[in-house]
Image (tube, rainbow, N blue to C red):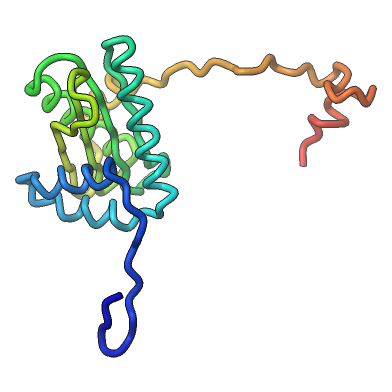
Length: 186
């Protein structure tokens, strides 16, 4: 505990080497916006940070398994900061160029003022080799709109369970129609 003016200040005890690597990568960055990125990351709850780390490892694992590009992003709310993590095959130059494009496109799409990007090569599991921070007021830009539409096409979602017919009997075995039982709208 550190005491400031006689009051104790709680210290965050949650630690994760992968999350610390994100912050360290930003600290090494020569972008002046990196400080805003560090502050944003340090502001996250431990649950949010753990979810980011879990998703990063899943992306790395998928990329290792098939050698293809994989990514994930946070910040689904409009006007809120977020981050994108991408693992690509290829060279460092290709990674940096692609990461820069993805960050700009995602920031534009979400109308955010701050977006962080982290990248790794498929061959460098666990190592963050590229960072990019985009900060600034959102403004309408036809070129960024085109880039965003091209890079961030919605991926069709596959339904995990078959769609239930509302007029069929409920799956719970009650004998009542689904729409009157578990399908009832609140």
